[in-house]
Image 1 (cartoon, helix red, strand yellow):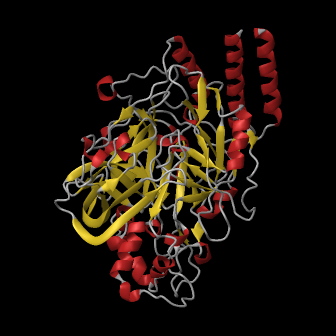
Image 2 (image 1 turned 45 degrees about the vertical axis):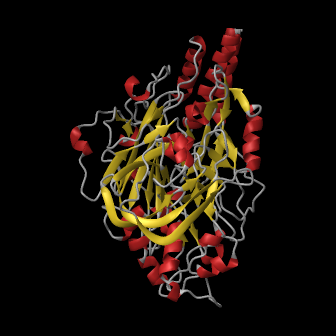
Image 3 (image 1 turned 135 degrees about the vertical axis):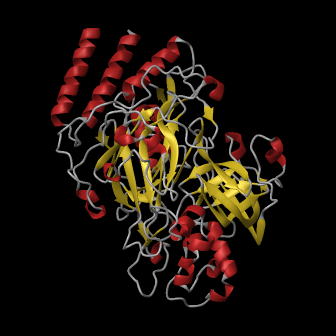
Length: 595
């Protein structure tokens, strides 16, 4: 009887997925809409295209682009090999921050365990500045401290001399526990704590300490959450910020007068990728990320960082492009130059969200923040969870029956962005709670702070971390760092959702129970290059090749397909009328048949 009920639950979940994905079919958009038209295109999902093999010719790249594979520690953190000086170190890939820091050979305590390579300091050029990075919230108190300096830094074959970073020599963070040596931020230069300190130190004569008509840069005091520490799936995402942000004297030193001078500094002392962008060193001012899956069912997309271009098998028009939120000065943003007073600059990879759905039902908007704040989300590879408004997360947990629930039937969390629906794979929505019990799961969700409309912080309500990103290709386009109105910053998303995901989760859970095993969970070290892919799936996105037993020490025993479904389906619109009736009849018939 129990097995019958579980089967019905799986049938219900699959039919619910059909309800979400296959209703009110509309015609495919004949061409990619412009950025301004993105909010008016027909709603739907970019669904699978025919899978095909990748030939060696598809891997060739121009000099001004680069690509490299990603390491994965149990889907908690994703890291990439970065060359700092003469040493290659694995660092956490983080689109939610903008700075690079690495543990140095001068680090004491846990740093000397020998688990990861440390930066030796032999080629380090100190800048007579210290980074004091404080992590956490009221419940945590971790830190990372060390000198700021410069050296040669390179990733995926793209490097620059005199690149600034922090060489950490004192920390109690858990970076080492996930096989990483530091953090590699890929955000905007305005969000860089190191750039702020270096610039103010180099341009003391340009500081204005009195009666400025507006602030040139105010994000350091208004946005203390700019740098993020890694997290495990079991705890809320920690944040870190420079010390003394609450000190008015420190804030006044960051009221810079010369906007043109400030913007030109992006090319010389900014973070690595924005420096390459500002110098015109990339084919396109962008990078893209896909994340592999190393829990529950190993596979999915190939873990990959592409810089300067999309993967060669992916076309730009297959992505849904949406604008990045701009912050005017009264909200903590960069002051526009006198010759372009209408310019509004981005701070983080924050994009608009149309609506959020759970199990086919549109979720209510949070009542904890002002209705005047438009719904938005941070796209954050450095976050192992999906974070949302406390009252909305509580609503989802109530719908699930509490913080712990049966791993199947699968549940469907979906975000409508740019008129398109992006579904979180059910295998990425859950995590096993206790060893030996693959039937009890928790959601990879946690509450986050609500935005406040007074210029005191970010305005996003959702933080879409790795569970979301494992089901998409995400492209991050900086646009123009100095004149965003001429070339707006934007994010492109391509859903790689597998239509068999719900059934695969049911199969994986059944097999784990039958074999008395846990769901698989492995760690892959960051590779030195781009590994060969299994083929391509949705929109030409490369698929991950399963890791070998000698590489991971673990063999995948998932029962479903880790690859993407085949087919060439039309874009679809959310609509629940006729399909809801049919779903109800199917579930009722199954229940009656199975007793």
